[in-house]
Each structure stands twice: as structure tokens, then as C-alpha cells.
Length: 283
Image (cartoon, rainbow, N blue to C red; front, side, top):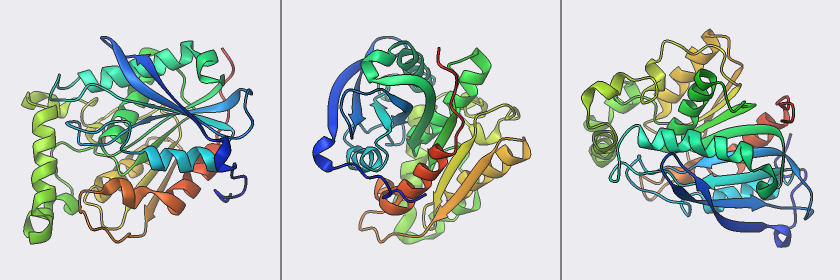
């Protein structure tokens, strides 16, 4: 399926800033719709931004989400903030993320969503939260998820994969290695939390009965190996999983991972993945 097959005219794009309910209070969020106004969309994609758990906001992936909904006008996209580690560390962000899913299920009318299909997604730290939401929804009995989309996810606080361990030996990537380590120190100040499956999905021993997954890695991204290893573990546990390594994009900023996940490759993969998901029953 081509992402351009049913692209909506840009003038039909509607964006609304709202508040959703997090674990301990309201969170800023943004709703994206496109195409025919006034109809309920069958699919909701809940998206969490990157920033290494310590920074980032709704504007980080705004361009990406505009492209996503214009290319897939039968979806509504809900992007939500979450508590950053400098305010409260783990598990504040994951509890917020799961609370946002619960809020969305209860507020279908406000979102213009039919309730048939919910997909959780994110990039980098936000993809960690998306993966953890799939675990939490299974463990807590809901909300039901039709799929999970993990774009260059941060899944390994131990920074133990080959693509991550090679960073300190590459002078041009030392800053990336330092930033990843600092992000996890901020998010997981208690060292024992680094083994918790809700912090380190890659090392979870319970990966059965999870929703289908699309995992997108990137040729030059240091998170590549942990993304692909997680995909292999999901497959081994019987989870329908698609893993795609996207070609490298020229970057002026080595930390600009949002850009190398964006545009044609990621958008096309996401469109195909969501189109192939079975809808959840309305509730």
C-alpha cells in the first residue's frame, strides 16, 4: 500500500490542542485529522514524542504527524506529552502514557473516533513508552490495542548492543553516547529500576500476548540493534511483528533522529501496517 494512495488535501488538515488526563493531572495533547470533516475515524493512533525522557514536546514530531494523517485520512492521531524525568523520573512517564490510553478510550466522541482500533506509537523515548504501554495494557486488562508502532525505540538502559557500544570509539558519535547515558541516568536514577520490564522492554522475559508490532530502525542510528533485537524477541514469543531497517538519511545533527525516521519510508510502512490490522470491537 502506498502512503500516497489516498492523500487528503492539505486544506482539510485540522489540528486541535487539548488536554488529556495523565496519571496525576492534565497533560497537553494535540489531535490531528484530515479529509472529510464530521465523520468518526475508525483508527486512533496515540503518539508519544522523543527527547530521551528528559526533554521534548508536542512540536518535535509535528511535521511527521501532519504528513501521517494527510496520507491516512481515515485515522485520527492523538499526540500527548508526558511527565519528563527532570520533573519526576520513572515510572511517571509510563504511568502517564498508559493513563492517556485509558483517557482516549473513554473520550471517543471528543476525539472523533469510533472506538474500533487503537494503535500506540512513538519515536525514541516515546517508542519505549509505546512498547511499555503494550505490556501494561496486557498486564492491566486494557485498553485493548490493535497494534504498536515503534520508531527507533530506546529499549535498553544497559546500552549493551553492538550499535550502542561502538559509539564511544567513534569520535563523531561520542556526544550521542554521552547523551544516551545521561538520558537514562535522568530517567532511571535508581539503578535497580533499569531491570524493570516497564523501563527495559528489551530484557523483559514476558513478551507473549502482545499486539502486532511494526518496528522501524535506521541504518545509521545507534538504537538500531536494540530495535531489531526486540523485534526478534517478539517474533520468538509468537507476536506478529514486522521489522524494517530504513536507509540512512543525511543528517547535519547526529541527534536529529526524528528526521531520519520521517517521510516516505516510515510513512509508507506505517500506512501498510495499520491497514492490515484487524479492528477491535467497539465498546
